[in-house]
Length: 79
Image (cartoon, rainbow, N blue to C red; front, side):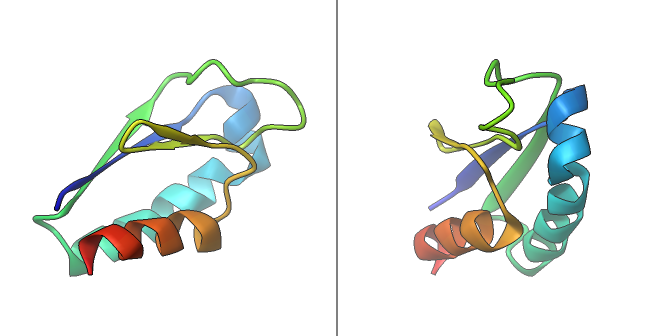
């Protein structure tokens, strides 16, 4: 199954760690190139201080996203 990941790269989410998260996801994508699609988007409209960084995973919004949480959810789908 393919996983579609949208990473919010708005100012707040970037400052809260999504740039680092994107780098981790790109490494994971290199292991599963046909199963993981990553798209950096301008904003996912969840800019409140207590929700950033934000990632959308197959339509599911993940707030306070960390590499561990997002990568774990992706691996549940691709394995």
